[in-house]
Structure formats: structure tokens, C-alpha cells
Image 1: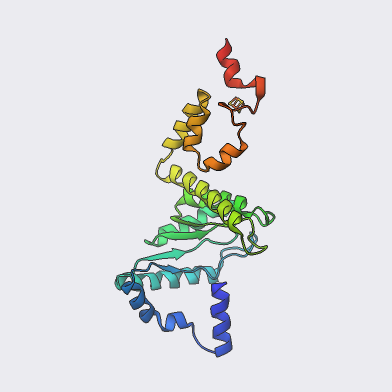
Image 2 (image 1 turned 90 degrees about the horizontal axis):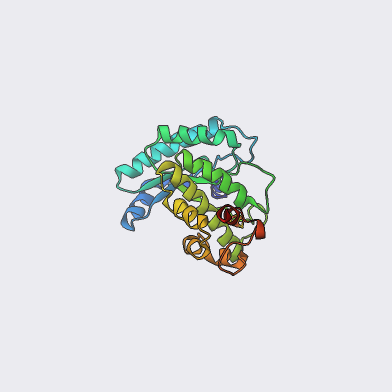
Length: 232
Ligand code: SF4
């Protein structure tokens, strides 16, 4: 949207991009207030059938030049790339392209690996972001269930944030081996310690709402595999 607003302004006023024209003034303000510059991804793919084309590659090259200028002026910078909609088998290649050619942190919006999930785009986005994050993306932009449909409400924002915290955790476990919490939960699960699992839950409130509110998991009833295996 930011790219479209800027493009419309340029067409209406027959002028160059004002953010580029005033780039050094903007950098001065950002440095004064210690603001991180996020260089956007206006040429992102709009559906999974879009391929990475010359426009996207050129935008990345220009963002890299701007990032170098900002860095030289002492302004922190991240580059947005590989956002939008990307078919699942291309996500890793896209992320690696950015990471291999840029020393700056990479920001991704989504990416959405399918176009059919509107109403559940936070789930589709979590899948894409998990792959992107595992492949090296540094900063994830959450997508809510209302994406492509309307302005998100508070609950939509919460669901989107939880979905992307899951993606970030999956990515961190791949990139940095940060999976101690998964192990702790598995250990508590193996001894049917529901309260112990609750203490480690990403969203305890929701986990408690879905549980039977007794001391252990009741999903399989009398056929609980763990109980059956302990019986003999
Ligand atoms: S009831 Fe089923 S899901 Fe729950 S702990 Fe036992 S085997 Fe696992």
C-alpha cells in the first residue's frame, strides 16, 4: 500500500519518489531520534504464480544502495524482501538470494505460500514464515485472519501475533537450535503433567480454555497411549 501511495503521488505530480529526493533529510531525522529505517518491498509478489522478476531484483539492488547510504550515516537499517505471496518451494531460494547478497537484517511479510486461505491467512502465513525464518529471515511481519478481507479487530491481531510467534520459534529452533522449551514440554507430556505444560504454553489462556480443566489430558479418554503403556 505504501508503494502504491508513493507511486500515485509521483504520477499525479509528475515527480520522482519524494522519499528518495529527501533521503538525506529523512536520514538526519532518523538518526536524531534513533529510528530504524525499514526499506520497503513495493514490488513484492501479489500471488503465488508471480515469479521473482527483474523489477523485484532491481528494487532489492536499489534498497541495498540506500541501506549502504543509511549505514554510512549511522542509521540502523533493515530491508524488506520476499514478502507477499511465494510458492512454498521457492521461499528458501528467495531468502537465500537476499541473505547471500545483503549484510542487513531481512524483514519478510508472510510470505503466504497459498492464495486460497483468506480467512485463515495467519495460518498460511505461519507456514510461509516458518520456512522463511528457518532459511534465514530475521524479522517477521504478522498477518491476521482478516488479511485481504477487512481491518483486523483485537482478536484477529492476537491470533496473527500468536501464529507468527510460532513461526519465529520454529525459525529460531532451526537457525539457533533454540528448542529447549519443546524438550521440556515433551518431558512433562510423557509424565502427563498438564500443569507443567500449561506453565510453558505459548498462550496459556487458550490452552486452559481447551483443556478439560482436570489434572491431565483427556483427549483419548481410556485409550491414552501413555497410560496404556504404563499399565503393563
Ligand atoms: S490422552 Fe492422548 S493426547 Fe492426551 S496424553 Fe494421552 S495419548 Fe497423548
